[in-house]
Image 1 (tube, helix red, strand yellow):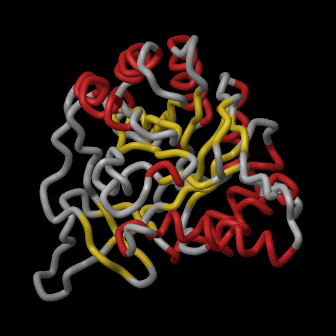
Image 2 (tube, one colour; image 1 turned 180 degrees about the vertical axis):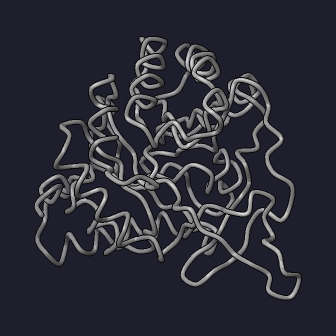
Image 3 (cartoon, rainbow, N blue to C red; image 1 turned 90 degrees about the horizontal axis):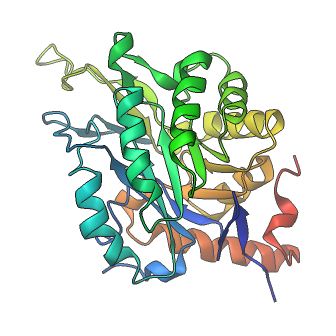
Length: 301
């Protein structure tokens, strides 16, 4: 018998497969393609205290080895999510990870206060949002801003574990990871998208309103793997690894680098069954290598 169960911040997952926020909707969008009971957890699309409209189209474009997105965290707000989406997700055994976003510390506090009372398992704090009070600088690009928003969010989350999602658009990922841990984070997830760009040479303009967009997919995997490895050596709290995972071998690499569990993201757009296929390939690897407990390989590099 193989053991695929993993524990993140006191929450036990049936297996290490989760889905990355923003790539799996709120779960119901994929329920007709896969049995949601087969994956360990779902990180739902980001929710804010009030509804966000997001960015105007175009929002998504393919690129070599991945995609660029500038959706802008469009969502109906946390109240709608709690009322309409949680009851659906609770029909399944998969754990619910809620990605929380905000443009100010106060917005983060408000959404976390509501999620603290909701029937969910983990709050994933998305600190890749721009801090409007500081001229748009991302919370997760500065240790002081990271410490502030994480500590304030943690104070509101007395009943739920806090996972902090780190931005890769920094000079030193370990300093941000340490700041989040010191401020009270119970776990980390990384990486979010890398900043990228595309130019339409015939229209002579960048197609996205914000000019830059988030790059995801296989192209970012080596960078993501390196950052997960570095962060895992710098902190003691568990890590949910993601960034270009497309198959079982990718997932195994991330766990060997130090991730306790992994998230399948952009691959879901190409194949709605990607997450369960990754799990099957991980199990096949365990059989071939004689691994009885998936936790045996975590952080062995």
